[in-house]
Image (cartoon, rainbow, N blue to C red; front, top):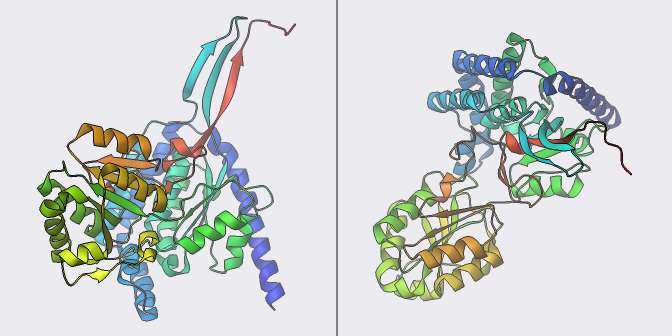
Length: 425
């Protein structure tokens, strides 16, 4: 029986792959107006079907609560009327973006008269594997379509009802614009064998895999994938508060970076404070976080100054809490902050709060994370906040896509060379 199930899944996934490859061809040459028409129709369908989407989400939430998952997981899974309106708005924002396909990135002339252009072109078929966030269904589908790619979506079992309800709206939008309905496919089974099939590349039909989820999922993808991967392993985000920082600004940023939404990858997990500012800045920052409901895990040096805090262990510096928990340490100025971050960071997002321009310059120069911020919350690590109309995820690798993966990052390029009869001697 198990062999039969595996055979059935392999056959299903192979068909999904073939359908995606066939849909990718017309998408690659679709006019911007046609893609935008599909996106507008998708947004309208999501808004019109919000009650059905909320009903599907209620089923997922009931199942999740019954299984006893963490509050941060419930937050990522939850849809509200406002969040659904946000999903529709994000799709419209993507429609408003410039179409990247065919954009001339660079051009130059050679001494022999050849004119060379580097031009954006779709990647082809993208596989997106994600867990509890149902909004990724809409974000990924819309972004891939805008960039002229077909996409295969494999959401987590926890959000299956919500994701499938959203997916049906995306398909309706494709049909309304006369685009192939297989341009955006949702894997209808929750068996992990479907993930394995996607990681194999589905017989060469998948060009890129984008995982979005927890550490174990992304680690599996990076370990087993036989196609290129745009991925981040985890978001170990840091904020360094320098002695030159404005205290009120630093307190506001720290509380927002940790507590606005604790379950997102841009949430601060470690706060570093200049030891030279311990007398003036340490207590107000820690007290502000405690008042907001955050558990603070601190070094013995800090606990001697502020009794009652939880003792931090070495494991805390490498933990992505995704919860109302924060590790705090004092460091010796910008040099100490750079040393700590370069040792423990996952190269996702870091921020510095400082008024000294020399400190900011060193922070920007000597730290090589995908996103660096000055005097701003790490919660801005988001493609929508960057004006990119949304994102599939934050890539922390150094090849091709890095930082928010938006429409431009979902393209490759080709060269167009124009001559007047040149031959090579």
